Figure 1: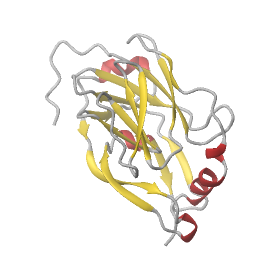
Figure 2: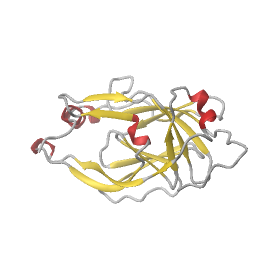
Figure 3: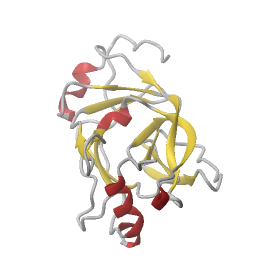
Figure 4: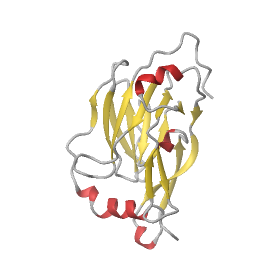
Length: 208
């Protein structure tokens, strides 16, 4: 069995998880008009990292250890995967967060679906990966395209803006930026965001 993304997997497993990252969290909060910056450590294959845009906090829970999910969160990240908390998402044909509000009434939002994510790397050297069933948002999770048709795999970020409708009907605009820290550590994700966006005068259609 061929291990998809072996170069990325091997480098993460053997080297980079031992390195320390200086900063993580909501480094620069957004006021809805100006961009904010979030740095998230998504190096662990077994953890979801939960972002709460209302309280500007980050938490995490290990799927393999059955750790309790935080009660309040809006978006969760796992490696290249993402999910919402009873929300939905849309990809915009734009890379500028400042234009996000212009698309609010023009896009269709897609809810999460049941999927599989890699969580166990203990038998990676034998080409065996462990998977766990979990909800994933198929739209946000396309922020990174992984081409396994060539070796080593080729990783291409979409550079698109994503709108995420949260469970309270407020909307956050996200753009995924760097996937490495300033120290060159993979799995340290930088996001730019605007929250809350001004919603259009006409109400958005109900979430699916």
